[in-house]
Structure formats: structure tokens, C-alpha cells
Image (cartoon, rainbow, N blue to C red; front, side, top):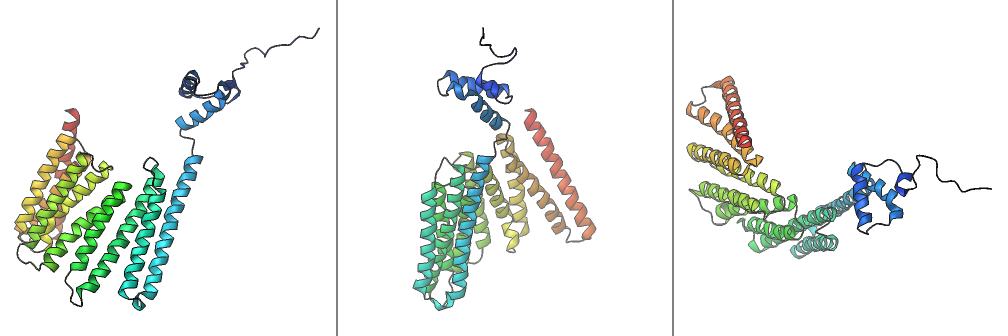
Length: 343
């Protein structure tokens, strides 16, 4: 009589066992899903394979397709902008002011509309692409405002178009950032905020005298304010915001040297900023502050010594002082970091 035999010894009828060997973590995840009634037990084996691939970092095909779509979006946007730029270069002189402003404003509207259409805050790929398009819209909108202001300003250059360009870039860039946060959006905002006051004071208001010092003070406030917003997590990209704020502070404390102001002012500002950066690192344990402090010490020590010795150190002396300053700042930074970690 024929009998129905079971599976050979050592063979399991569990569907999961018909698939390749999976990790214990993947099996635990799949078992939890089955136990919660979220997964059909019949699909246990296939699900275990997928979860195992994800945990091992091998599931790249879907992500690869998403990256391809994202890159294609960037390339498509770049081609559209490049076509517009080439068109404007070829026909700009033949356009009147209304046509120029209309083309630039139209491009800004199209880019912003596409960005709004594809924006999805919870989808990083679509968010980054939308953010890039929003920055493009901010630049073209600022250009349209600048062209219009230049026509209204007349033949005499007053700097007003540049101020309006920078203000529009900052405002539209900030609006775009609120809709689709990105590092590029932060950069658009900070560039506009850096650029506008300088033109306003020097070209529009035609102020002389302490203008570089006023701008240095403004940049210090801008950098400190930017860092304060970063620490309060107003900027989504906190690390990038810290780096941007530190960069603005470094620019601010060196600003007086760029415009022939008394050098000691820059030295005092730089030394004070370095001390504050080290103190911020001790409190917040964020490496951009440590880098800022080390960089400022490395800059200010050679600057001050070369200035006070009237350049008599020569090339070799300058290199030696710079090297010693960098080594000293690095050693101090390492000791400070070690102390912070041990504390």
C-alpha cells in the first residue's frame, strides 16, 4: 500500500526556510509583523529576504531609481535655465525693459510652480529637487526686480538695483526655504543678507567714514543670530547652519582689514571671536565652533606679529610664525576637545 511520506529529516515546511538564509534580526522583524497580523504568513520567506537586504544595506535598486529620477530632475532644470540664459544672451539687447523683466519673472514663476507641484516635505528626494528649483526662482525673481529697478533708476548708478536684487533674493529664498528646506536655500538667504547692507550704505546712502566698521558689526550680529537660530533648530540643517554662521563671523571679524581700517580692531575682534567660539564648543560640543576658534587663532597670531614687526620677519619668518600659530591653535583645540569629551 502506498503511503504519503513527510519531508525528509531535517527539512522544514516553514515558507521562510524555502528562501536563502536570513539574519536573526530580519527573522525577528518578520515574526513581529506576522504576529501583529500585518503580514501574511505565506509571505514570510520573501519578506525575510527583503528585510535582510535592507538591514545589510544591499537593497539599492529602488534607491538607485530614485537617485536617477532626482538627478534627471536636476539636469532637466539646469537645461531649462541654460536655454533661457542662452536665449537672453542672444536677444537681450533687442529686448526692452518690459520684455526683459517679463522673461525673468516668467522663468521665476515657472520654476516656483514646478517646485510647488513636486514638493513633498516627507520625501527627501522631492524636497531637495523642489528646494533647488525654489532657489532658481529666487535668483531669477531677484534679477527681474534688479532690471526693473535699474530702468527706473535712470542712467546714473545709485546702487539701488543691487540692494533690491539682494533683498529679493533673501526674501524669496526664505519663502522657498520655508516650503522646501535645504542647505542651498540657506545659502541664498545668507548671500542676500550679506550683500544688501553693504550696497545700501556705500552706494545708496553714500556714507563714508566708519562704514566698514558698521558693516563689520552688522555681519557679527548676522553670524551670531544665524548661529542662535541654528541652536534653536529654526534651520532644519543644523550642522550646515552652524558652518554658515561660523563663516559669517569669520568674515565679519576680518572685514576691517579689507577696507584699510586700523588693524588692531580686526585683531581684537578676531581674538574675541576665537574665545567665544571655544566657549561655545565647551557648552555645545559642536565641532564647527572648535574649527572656528582654531582657524581664527591661526589667522590672528601671524597677522598681529607681522604687523607689529613691520614685516621684518621675511618670508621664512612669516612661514615659521604661521606654522607655530597653526600648531599652537591645533594643540589647544585638541586639548580642549579632550577635556570636553572627558567632562
